[in-house]
Image (tube, rainbow, N blue to C red; front, top):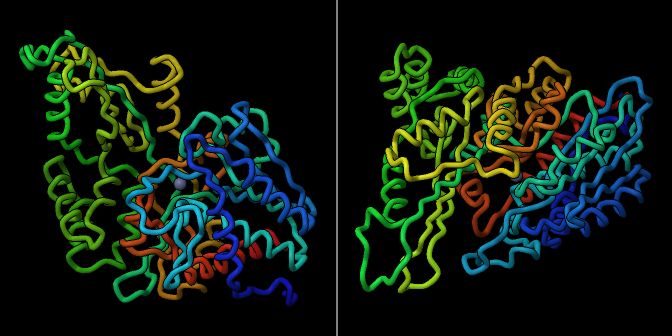
Length: 466
Ligand SMILES: [Zn+2]
């Protein structure tokens, strides 16, 4: 191995790049990533990379590609990271969310964790290949995606007309977490090989409008019916289902778990009926240091009321009330079955339930069914092996755990074309950092960014260098 191909410890440049990325307010909506795309284009052009910007018809969502050419003897590798972020509730932040503030070893700002931090790591790893003029056997493509958090012009849209720019042998995107334990050591590096699917349902009720000084029977009003329906829904816990990706995950955790946790995992894997699975899931959620939210999400289709809309004036009984229920489906679950389950639970035919989609209800149901049936990414590829080997170098006590992502990503564009995609949040985090995702004072440690860049750069060297 020549010296320029040798692994290297990165400097603070990833943190500096992240700070710059945070200063572009790419909150989605409206999801304007054009200025950020132009900024990256300038950076990569200086390094001799081929760059391309694809702007969506809404003239806001801009996807950015940088490509380092290889000799073509192998198919490209692609690193995808979304550049848009969720909006902020400014009043609950204690630092400016779009300044890239550095404090106590952390960089604060919207997207620091999800996923401008990842974009900075992926981009720096690719830039380092270019800076050191590493000869490549395959193209290395960086894609800074637009519209991941909102939807219409995301990578599925991009793939329709620009697949040639995205085609690869395998790809990386956001997904599994790297957890630091209470003693600050990394023992678990999660790499996601499947995603849960996000489907939002609208529950709508109607009733007579009128003056609130002469109330109607509550059960006749739109708001009264909706409140009763949601109360029944909230009291319901969907049953435990052990899908393959979750089973693989829990099996891989066995050797690195406490005795108590290992016993709960064995109880889950050996459970022969629904009651036994429920009991095992309770054991797991009661006894993990991460509050049990993750095992719960990996073992159930979940549903959460996230938006409520009704009424415009305090003295008017509104004629309509609406709730958005965000469901997260396990691989294989049919949305029709979830809708039927909700109908049974709320037991009120006057509540209308529809999938929130620009498609027809039938089209949406079959589209989502296709997506929950996509196969997992196989773990027998050179990229997965390189991720595993190089994680060991950066975090010697770590175990690599293939798992399912409890959230959704835009990996579908690749997975539905049989391109393996592996999901990583490429930096160690703890519960405190994770709890800030989509919340106030989002942050990531400078040191974690450095370790992540070392991991991804060395992985690229192994997979793509000549
Ligand atoms: Zn994200």
